Amino acid sequence: MPIENSSSTPAETAKMAETMADVIARSQQIAADFMTNQSGHLAGSFDPVQFSEQFLKNMAKFSFDPRALMEAQAEFWQASLTLWQQTAMGALGESGQKLIEPEAGDRRFRSEAWDDGHVFDFIKQSYLLASRYVIAATESVSGIDEKKRQQINFYTRQFVDAMAPTNFAMTNPDVLKRTVDSKGENLVKGFKNILDDLERSEGQLKMRMVDSEAFDLGHNLALTPGKVVLQNDLIQLIQYEPATPTVSKTPLLVIPPWIKKYYILDLRPKNSYIRWLVEQGHSVFVISWVNPGNELAKKGFEDYLLEGPLAALNAMKAITGTAQSNVIGYCLGGTLLAALLAYLEGTGAADRVASATFLTSMIDFAEPGDLGVFIDDEQVESLEQKMKRDGYLDGTDMATTFNMLRSNDLIWSFVINNYLMGEEPLAFDLLYWNSDSTRMPARMHSEYLRTMYLENRFKEPGGMVLDGVPIDIASVKTPCYFLSACDDHIAPWRSTFVGAGLFKGSVRFVLSGSGHIAGVVNPPDAKKYGYRTSRSRPRGDAEAWVESASHKEGSWWPNWQQWVSKFTGTKVKARKPGAKKAFPVLEDAPGAYASKRLDEENPT
Image (cartoon, rainbow, N blue to C red; front, side, top):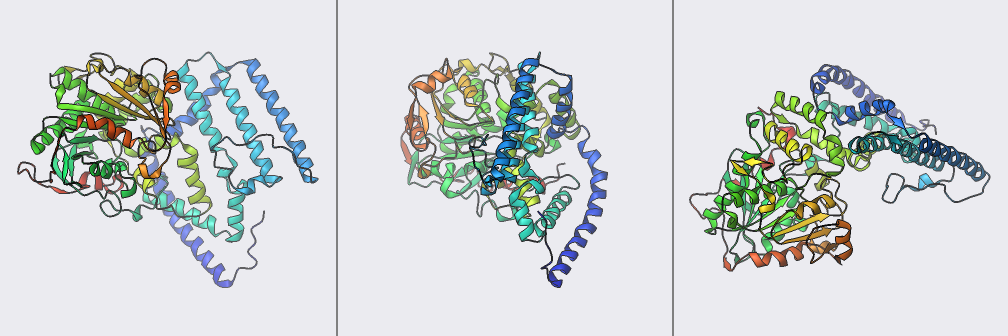
């Protein structure tokens, strides 16, 4: 489809020429910076894309099941021939049933232009047939262990997704239409967006997913009123202003994951879990983790326990005068909560926690899902070498890894929007949070990867020793509430189900709809997703548990509130932050630890 410019005015032509001259001038300097910086940035770093390319090259060394491979080839060629015949008949005005359709939930081909019955319909179906063949062929690899098979399948899917016709200007009908309508200005803008991303990242291509200028913590995100009342090397402890005249006697501590900022639980008032907790009459305290530089390189998992939830519980006891607390742990925060409970059991202080709530948290890492693809001895050793040099794992490394788990949604859709369509990134609060990455200290992250993912000994009695105390998950008798999400690709619910069954005390397991974020941040007013719950303990076969569980409409939040109300104690006068002289107000929430973005800091 040609791009016609015959109707362009002299002013439009001059503007286009001026824009292109600016692009060329900037690209020369940026290209030079790129070549200078690239070797330094990539040497010894964790690069999932580079890893995947190398892995696919090594596939030539694998042996395939000849029979399965021949069947896949025969099916592919027969289907391709049929598609050619259908396309030829379509050109003569005849229509027939499509040979292959995108999977449910595949939004790449939702545009009506892909169903034109001719060129683009043929391109789409050809791609889908080829994808099916490539995946079937790689599944026929024989003589390998399950870990290697998972890696093959994952990186094959990455390759297939990258080759989609939607990702290329000349095979995407929407991009072609925009190019004709704009006289090519979309491609010029897209090129400028590429240069902007390279320039901003000093020669590394880090694609913007969101308009970061549209958000400001404390002004249009993280709005629940609160104060920072404690600060140490690793945390700021936020105490939230009460929203009710009286509150539950037992305070509530929230432990978020340290891999991202806590304000995923306090994005906007309409979907803020923290605001909702305050409105239910809880005295809410939330940990905000620091974004560490190499000065904290030697901080380990033990330090995260002692300076994190243990320090917070001690402060909460002094502030509220109540020895017990209810505790919520989200994702990695839930893994740390499990360590806290076992530590308290081991020190004879189990009564410090009245109840424990785990949100999409893994304790048994035998089946870690897609994330496990990235974690083997070779990759961990490579990471450790990089962290030894830097003192931390850069947040962008982990961000790239997480994005690859949903590459069509979190990588290629932005390539199309930013670089092919020439659009600016949208102002979307969830994507702003997702791009707000944090670092992880070298020692802590190494301990975490080896103890949990590589060796899976965290669940074993004494498999981890913290502050001289052997951690024994099976000794924990604290009442627990486990919330998992059926489409979670980070903490697969079947794995969290197994972990929930390790505890000695009573456990309620709840399975929410949707994924790792939406399944948790699901306010009642949204009336979405629903959840499953059962009187049965989470033991035995996970599928059998699902069959026996009853489905409830709406959010799991009220179900949790009903459960936790048994552990909240009597009502007392609302507690104001800063009322205790020993814990004065240090600053307003969200606090300095959360407000500083990684791209605004220079780690020391």
